[in-house]
Length: 132
Image (cartoon, rainbow, N blue to C red; front, side, top):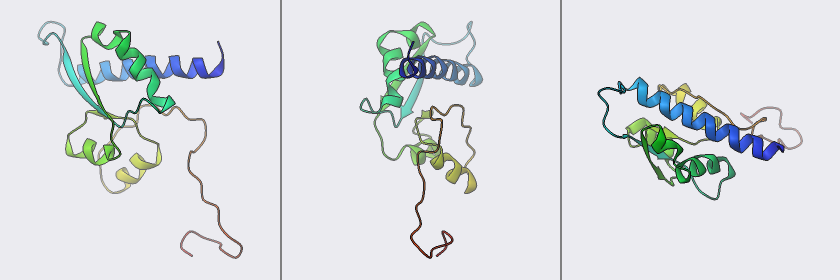
């Protein structure tokens, strides 16, 4: 299995487990839960490779098999939506939840698909700090 397929498979399985955990954490039990536990997911775009595992899991019925009905919404404002309660789970780069948490948002980051930061800063000659 090549590296990309491994990441996609791992990401999909992990996302499935995270969503299942969220369902159980919200008090859903096998005896008393409705046929499906509904989750609103924001920030997932089919054009983004990091979202493919979630879409594949949906297409293959993996979420339904676990009693989850997941509604995916493409959004560029997924963090404010999560904080406001519009989304139960979002796909987001690591910097956004870090910034939100530093401003007081109560968040839990459960998975990061990247092996290195996706953002960086290049400073010009003579610039020695971000404040400059």
